[in-house]
Image (cartoon, rainbow, N blue to C red; front, side, top):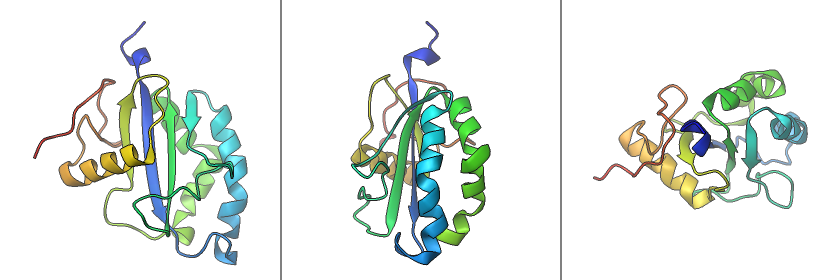
Length: 158
């Protein structure tokens, strides 16, 4: 077994809504959620995604902010995540994100390695995002642009 096979890639991204989810402004986004999630679920390298009873995570609280929504998943590796993100339906939605979400100045996406079968919590994801914001990309929390080899890591001490 290769070293990379001992780990899965966890990802979180958050977005601040420009309008309520049930508003006409977000209609296209909301209608695309189930089809895009179905594509993710079937994607090569997909392992798991956060969802509530609604089938998605739009009602899962993050950072105590009712205007933030969270997306969290685990993947085989960065290549699998990248292939899903930048192809097909997800790419189409990504191109329209400024219609639905505010542009935030701080990091909204973080990646980290987990043991297979580990399902990250929202609290864990918040910690990783805060760490990335405070320290930039490290083995503990990184980005696709600045990634690190598979392995578990400790937070940078202050």
